[in-house]
Each structure stands twice: as C-alpha cells, then as structure tokens.
Length: 157
Image (cartoon, rainbow, N blue to C red; front, side):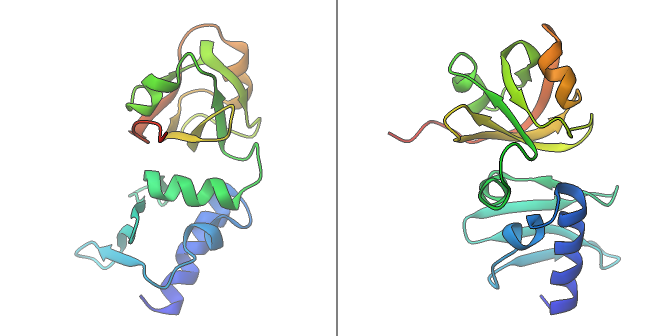
C-alpha cells in the first residue's frame, strides 16, 4: 500500500471516530488492502485479522481485530457501549446488545455509527452498528442498542 492510500484511510477513520483513530487502527506497514474493480479500497487486513471494511457509504465497518486496535487508540467513552456480566456471554457469541443491559455509552454515538461493545472491565466483546443514540441506549428499557456484527468469542482465562 502506498503512503497516499494509507493517509486517506487514516483520514476517514479520524473523521469517523475522532482524532487518533486512524493512526491507531492503521499503524502497521503490514497492512493488506483489497480493492474493488474500480480501484476503491475494500478490505483492510493485518496479521491478526480483518481491521475494517470500507463500505460503499464511505465509512468503515469494524472487524474484531480493528475493534481491539481502536479500543487501544481511543480514550473511553469514545465509540463505546458498555454492558455488564448479564449480557457478556451472549454479546461475545455475536448476539445483539440490548438497551436494558447498557450501563454506559458514549453520548456522541448516533444511530448507524460503528461502535465497540465492551464489558465494564474494559474487555472488547463485539463490534457492530448502533441502533440508538448514546443517550437513548441509557434511557430505554427495551429495544436493540447495538446490532452486533462480530463477537469476540469466548473469554480467555
């Protein structure tokens, strides 16, 4: 990947999640980028797995590896939805996170934003698309808060 493409990918990530996200997400020179037939970036992979997919709407969707990098790059509560023990095993499996179980959420989250679902301990549980705004996740007692795309899998002991 050339430097110009890396700068563009970082700029989109900084716009989507805030300053520092691009450098944290795409910090490796070992990145592999696949492209569409028209030459637009599609998948961004690193040795640990898929970081992100560059969607047709011009925004990234996260993979678990990308969620881990983004969590390390951004200070809480940025792009985070926090849940407790009750929903942890389900969200880790890739099931959706419901508003009833959300204990904290970034107030800047808007419906449709790409977010990380984390445990109160700080462990990444899943990545997905916010269905409610950050304030709504805390205010509502019913409904889906995050449509989970990828769960992090079983907890490491």
